[in-house]
Length: 279
Image (cartoon, rainbow, N blue to C red; front, side):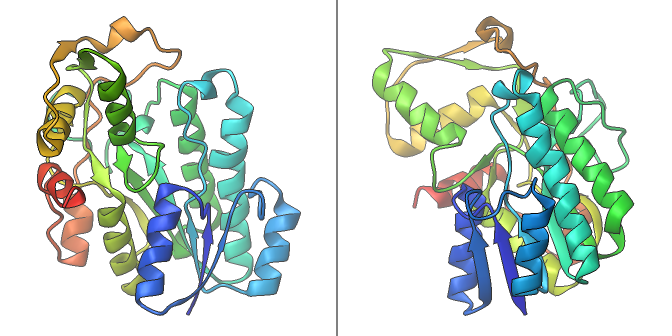
């Protein structure tokens, strides 16, 4: 089986490369410079040359605030690029895996975690682009595609909350962290492990893939600093005081129960997974 990884320099792409190397799998990993997924001709050229069996789309535009003004750049990668990969995968009979986000939801649900049955209603451009990508995959080739919604992803790299928190802690006397923004911190390790199990079993469709449980940004930050042994006062504040360009859902935690049942596995709770990350 030949794996094609798009977005090789991102934290998820790097995690997949590490896992596939460990298993001695045959894979080709490409960066944005090597394959801009919004360029259909380039995508088809890569597929024709490599002829992958499994396509892992880790390419993403994830600058949530910049997406408000650079919405076309966000759409090019998160929607158009996803459609191109779904089309090419269908054309070459490849199994296609791509990743979406909890930001497809508006955060207004009050009676439980978001499930796959809940109707998306994104409140920022990033979420809208990701939802468009989901819809195009469903239209193109859902019978041999897997869409995995995840949230608050962290791993080895700089584009995540843990890295940013470490920078803030180093440069500030005390920290202000939102208590009213709630989701599920999810490790790249969990995403890779579950994704590869899903691939092995040929799972298709749309599922929520996060660690278990949920937390506020404030709770997550407290846990990180505790594990790192950093004594820094954290003042809980409303997310509204930051006045960021993109609106964030206040509660976007998703339920991973369906994929857990389908694959017959227990996905670790977010706090236990963060502890493992720092070991």
